Image (cartoon, rainbow, N blue to C red; front, side, top):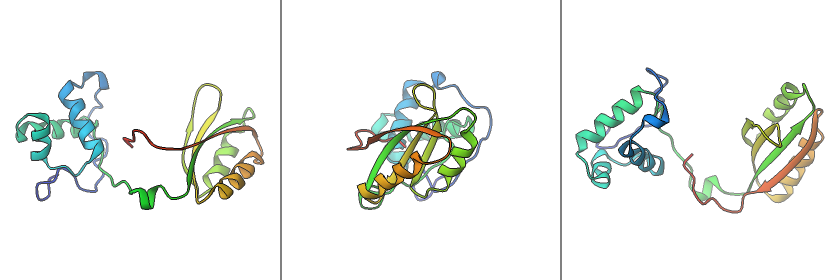
Length: 166
């Protein structure tokens, strides 16, 4: 897992071993995970310093969290210049009964769709769109609203990210 003192590399660890319930994580695990979510390339030595524990403790915790599938991989997040150009919006989508498969298939064809979740509550789906401009977002919303099986969309444009641990 280590390369030149770094905790992470771009790899997928996959699901190995039993998944641990989040409630079984202790405070040190949670603080370690928060630091890794902020910067997964932080060295084990730096993590140990920030947490006030030995480097070997950090390495043992990381190994255990990986084996228990709490940590399943490390990734790269794009900076503001690449990842935040344009406009992002969350779109709540209400569909006709039994139209889920059709609507999902149509949404999957949109390159601006970053994430689609089926949700409970007011909407059937919550979509995250990333468009190059508000003009393109408006056109996308019109397009989605015209999909067969879509009854209603409700849009919230992202103004700023306050906390992002994705």
